[in-house]
Image 1 (tube, helix red, strand yellow):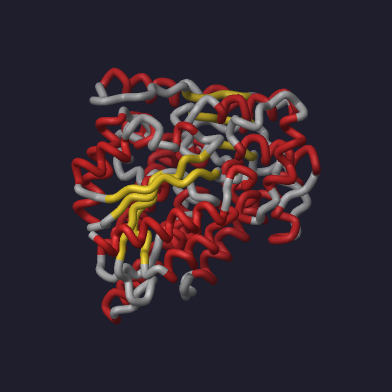
Image 2 (cartoon, helix red, strand yellow):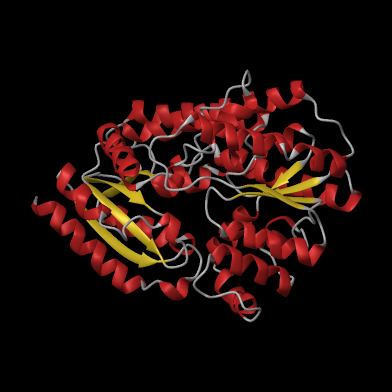
Length: 405
């Protein structure tokens, strides 16, 4: 993975994010809301909360390979090893009083929440996850219940989600001690929309041949779009990163030297194996140029003139809540833009909602698009579900197959 000049700014944004949160938790001001990663962050930030995303912490536990040590502690409470490993490793980390934030930022623990806010658009596990903390820490738990497996989205569905988001306000006012301010909310929605548009533009630089960056780079540089959307800092970051990527394109700098093959990554990252997978694919002259996962933080439907309705639309049009037919059309549109010649499906053991290989999609897309597909088994955090040797053999054979086409 080639270094980016923008990485220094990225590290500062992430350090400020966690250090500000740690300071607020100790001083009791501002209040802290925990939010699922595609939850109503704009409303929370617009009402003056600092927003903490436990899924980001789960990804850190996976990337630092600490997750597998913590999962059994949560299993011992009766939570199955087959459910979301973000959930099991994060709660296990809490129980063990150990977090990667200690080494990274000198922070002893994740910030205690004043309120927990979920959206079930990703899965039911996020509600169960936050429910455990609500019981443990005795803080309010509120949320949005989303529609799932949606084909054509109707105004009824959008309006329902918008009304549910509005319904969160009284509890948030009571927790924060502040009245809802429509102007501040609209400004946060605008900043989040601007961040999303820039994030889309950032990802679409990979349509260039050769690509200036890979999926593995994007999983790192997406952090501001996840944890800081709705802030000026996130907007500023992508306004810095995009010119760097465009300069790479202008200079003919490839993320993978001698790029011969281009892949689409469908499914969750394997956080503890990002670098080995990146290096393996680079050695095979193969660049992963696009992914469902990184695209999932594009919310350019947001509109400050219709803040609630546009949030309802943005958080209902997500890939993860759509039916198979929509998902296939979406990947087909990505194929037209990014010109990949194969799709790598990751079947994540503990994340069925982000594993789209299980109902025949690889076979249908292979036939429709004339592409080769490969499914590897693994997990987002639980490395006991992943065989590095088996995956390496499968990927090498897959690239040989592409060579012969």
